[in-house]
Image (tube, rainbow, N blue to C red; front, side):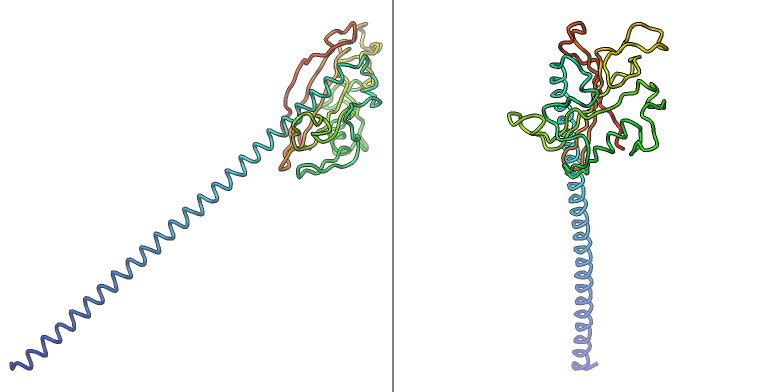
Length: 259
């Protein structure tokens, strides 16, 4: 083999090694690119997951905060109404709807607060009849939820309004709207839900009215983000003889009562 042939073979082998090296380098670069794109995809996915989680957690925290605000407003409205009721010598006018609280913007119609559409007629009907309307229904009918017949509470709006109206400008206003209904104690035996402690009916077979000096309060508040909280309070005269003062017999939050 002459020198020229040998040189040609060496050149050919070197060219093949160069091509092979270039192909290997290209393959390595391609693998690195795939790995980089894969890592970028993982990072983007994790970022989106974290962003979604943070958004959900923020919404949960905001809703929880709004619910607490609504509950605080319901409690404050109930306490304000109870304080005014304690100063009244008679609750008959309150039960009949003739006497209302200082803060009262009406007992009927629609309101809008905190993203919630409030229908006072509908809310009262749910308390009275357990339905969106009392049409064709009798509030004194005996049902599972209202088994006292003629002694069923005839709920009437006693206080209503926005937080600043109910609590006054001297109190840091909570956003929202609240309503306080008043009803006669169903433990009475006078068959007159618009009168507190009337004389027992004949069929009661008792000269004593056990519900005298006791009334019910139902406070509902709507807060930010459409939140809603509801309370039921039973109050009684601190001094039944003098019809003075007031004390709380029971106080509970009503859950699952949204109509």
